[in-house]
Image: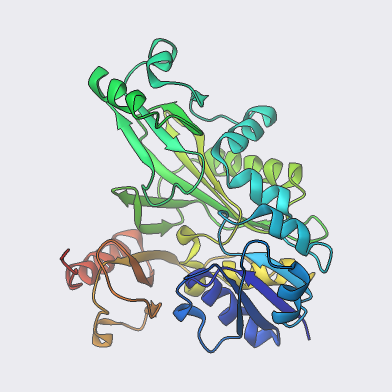
Length: 367
């Protein structure tokens, strides 16, 4: 029986464990100081990592796992490297560190010849305007997710204020892209190097937070889907990557630009729990455990709706083709508290069902 430790105690760790338990695996979780662990309560032992703590003690407290993985990229790379002395860490620490820092991520894309937005690193915005031109977007290289630690620079006044506060330190500043659609490619690579792809997914964000996903992406040429698979395959092979990876892209004038890489299971792949032969969560566990990958073929047209800052919806809203995943977190505005997966026979039917459910959700108002 394999024992897997996961860095992090959020909903992704929860869903990884729930996918792995039926395979006979056991789990433990590495918590940061003061991290909320309610999502993984009852699924395995939780050990808190204190910087400076002997890693051997942590490894013992975790139950001597056979493998360590991550639910997020913002982790202590040094911890992952030290854990490698005790067991495999998959994806490898270098891959996690590269995808966890936007500038290193951009360097990888440029080296591989994979298109991304024109950008500068650690440079005052006023020095970027001439070569990139307004409008710009600035993004912290670390801890930037769900729209956090990002700044829109539309005017010279925005640029001056941004530079005055020296917010450009360890940031990338990019040309803002007038994209037509936001798409994501979720794929998985095994220990032997086999790669399987889920269908390209269409995503809709509000205020930088993913609201809903639909798969397969509608009216996307086969050449674009093939391009996405080729790009993520090259990235995974360059990093000697094992596990699930997500690649978020902009579609611009019939071409893909990579916006972000996630070295983990991803929000835009949640639909695979009910819409694919094998979910992204089970396939990640299979990959890091050295098992054969499961099929990624779809069951009809699928979608996912995030429940952001909402009360838990009544179960009588669920139909035979919808499933609710509630995370058990404390309810507060703008927080991802759960999601609903949908299956339908057609795209219009799917959109109608998602809209019906979304209208019935009650949002929590800020205090």
